[in-house]
Length: 227
Image 1 (cartoon, rainbow, N blue to C red):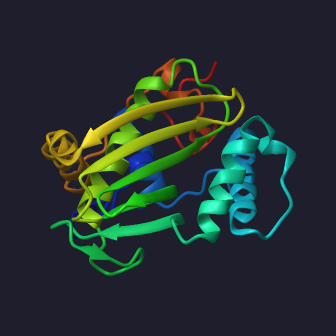
Image 2: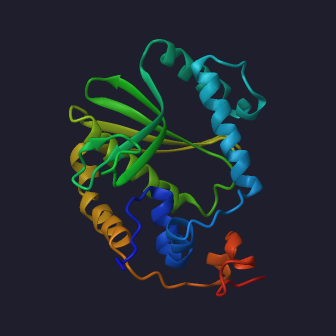
Image 3: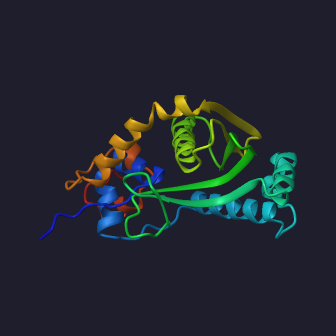
């Protein structure tokens, strides 16, 4: 029997794998569905509302009220053809652009909004719901990966500003990168992703922290730490 591997990765999938490979095994190889946590469902709903508002499909939703001016501006820029929404980007292992569900897709990157300021500069925007404190480092890493992916997808870009919009807190975390600065981190991301997609063993890493939000601990996982 061929060894089982996880063929594709994304930021969230990689994060899960590095915290607990066994959870990734249950998700991606055993394909045991996990119920969506209420906080995650709320986040998905708000992301959908943001997309539909910027596209002009709905009136301004209350869920975005702390970013009213920002979303009004984003909607105007979308009408002017400067914004790409909900980009479902696929890349092969050689970082060639491919479709999201292509047979040779390896990396999947999903941006909330990409604003083209001019031919060589852009803004990468990611909406965040829920807790900000304690997530800053992970969120900054995610934004960096998005910047790297955007530079790869758009070879003419030389400057990117990442913006994390914390919709529940009226706060924005920004970082700027030149192409040279961002691509310094590219080899490390590739190394991490290859470790995940080439793994054939998926040891559990149970702890109070890693098991806290994992629904498998109640049934599918015999190693789960239950509070």
